[in-house]
Length: 201
Ligand SMILES: Cc1cc2nc3c(=O)[nH]c(=O)nc-3n(C[C@H](O)[C@H](O)[C@H](O)COP(=O)(O)O)c2cc1C
Image (cartoon, rainbow, N blue to C red; front, side):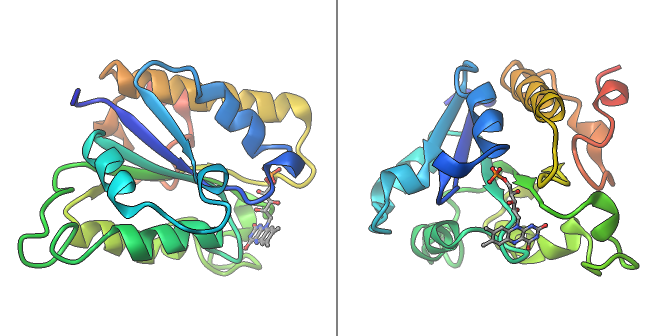
């Protein structure tokens, strides 16, 4: 396993109706070193192949969840994936060391604006706070949790803006897979794509 291989666990239950995530995921599909794993396509009946998923995890050093935010959380299949795949004695617990040392971040789209995801905003919690169960899950598994890549305000987003985010997503993937992503500069960022220009200079 190269130390820069990325596994994107992609979860969108109605990709045929997607305006944003479809463009984002298509932008990174062909990046060398990136495996896009479309969970709803693979498991439309929720019958997850646990052994296959565990093998995929072992073969990659970066694990990403990519999904639209649904009720401040993941779509249901991605929760089912966590419940079944991250087994005791494998991912965590005594002898549960299979995933130690890997890195994780979430790629999310939200209908709500960035200002809504503040203490004073109408969603009252930041995205980082809402990701706490996932952050703690990966902590238990010995996986480093990095700031999320978040695309806010998707509901009225213009095509050009969607394409700009897709280009940024691709840029991040290309940097990770070529070991040139400046992760040391991301500490404390609320989102990875907050200011990519200054991150890359
Ligand atoms: C079932 C459901 C729940 C949603 N929950 C949230 C939410 O909690 N917060 C939010 O900002 N947007 C929420 N949205 C909006 C989606 O995040 C938004 O539609 C998505 O980012 C658009 O991406 P797409 O064009 O790829 O479908 C929800 C949408 C659906 C269908």
